[in-house]
View 1 (cartoon, chains in turn yellow, orange):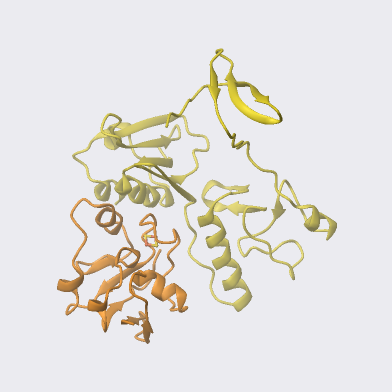
View 2 (cartoon, chains in turn orange, yellow):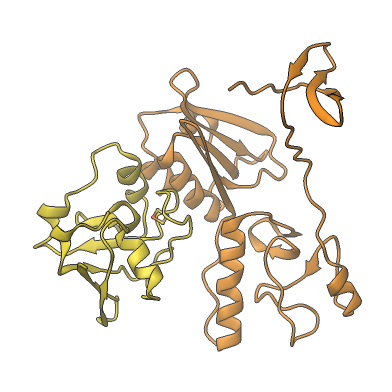
Length: 207
Length: 108
Ligand code: FES
């Protein structure tokens, strides 16, 4: 398997109504039997709008997953929810987000205290690479590498100008992911030198 | 079918029959045992299926290899202890009949 980055698709070629290849802007033609197109998604909020619920590219909800009609809850990819950590509203397409919102909804409906806020996170296995991502790199101005690209075990830390860690993208680096999540949740600042220093454990960095 | 005994943080015990080949995490989820979140569905990516294995059972079940994905995740799990395991990584066998696992105070 090859991953082509910075490649522009110019055209799909076909014969007899079936796709046969993908032509790239650099002239290369990659033969294929099938094409999977992933171009993002638009929230399907027509039903909510028809019901008079506030929508803004997704159904607007609060931290209890309530819409502006207190009798109606909405959760999952189709909602625009508050992210207090980043002081904004966001639509998050991820399983952990749906699970967090499910806990928020259940707590609200049952009159229980709300669950502890979570740092948004994502994960995916791509063959022998485990990708684990904590946080979202809003306003990040610097990317710091910890670990080794050559060994395929590293993490990228996204920092704002004042050194606040906004996101950590970890590849085969579970400690960096778990520690990163904690650091992000604490709004902790780190210097690039600290992050690069492998003699400091993630436990030490996350304190 | 082996019985696994899940003990909640508040002391409530849940004896559950878990088919051989299922994980200890799945046994809890399949039977609505509270206290195990399993946010990643058993892929060793979230550390929210954390349990403490009873001392008597620890030698049988064993600990994750140092440096393994599980050990790395556990080192950051909420309130990890030397007897901590990620329950999605324990596959139930007949030898585990009667095993006791305890849930931590929280999974986050
Ligand atoms: S279910 Fe996520 S680590 Fe076990």
